[in-house]
Length: 263
Ligand code: NAD
View (tube, rainbow, N blue to C red):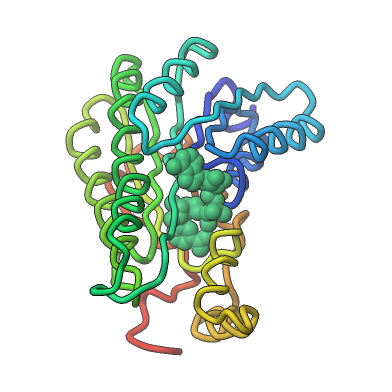
């Protein structure tokens, strides 16, 4: 029997990048999928590609902005109406914001980063947890970042919001472990997704590929990570096998966060 057979896996930010990669991995493991994103076109494409490769795969797509509480409540309710349960919740949607120094950071963008990365994750927990509590089972993976365990130059709101994700993960573990629910976070380093491609353009607008090379060079593995490598870890954390790892923030960064400086 496949690991996710009879499991409903709910993924936010599922239209591309890390969310989409996990959708593919979860489909291979036999899950029923609920894909949430505010980019409807990306959702339609994800569903069409996935069902082409996995005939019989059940996929519900829901357009929602995770920073809007009512839309979060609605995507959770729609999931329960359709499938009756949520076994795994990949609370992944997030944005980077713009790169700028602390005193020059645009305050509206700061608030937007916090609304999506912090409040969006919180709303997800607020509405998913009661269903998991009722069933006395659930697996949650929140997405922090290496910016959730250390500082990152010129990205203060991102770093603040991702440290908050790590904190919310710990609190969820403390308050909900008694109901058979585990809550962990991942802290990816630089993984090749559309978000990171955009970041390289900001770091070096004239030559984004040079920025990518610099990042790879600074990593002990001498390369960036791939979304599929993250998805493997996430799917373990979303599985019933992850029964006694709780409240952790797990770096997926080729070892880079162990370093004091460049390697
Ligand atoms: P991405 O930009 O490639 O994909 C993010 C997806 O989330 C997109 O489909 C986007 O439409 C969706 N999304 C964004 N804001 C949303 C909102 N308010 N409501 C609904 N959907 C929304 O990004 P990614 O690299 O896949 O990042 C996914 C998560 O991983 C983010 O939380 C990000 O901070 C985190 N992360 C990524 C990296 C990396 O190297 N890629 C590193 C550390 C952390």
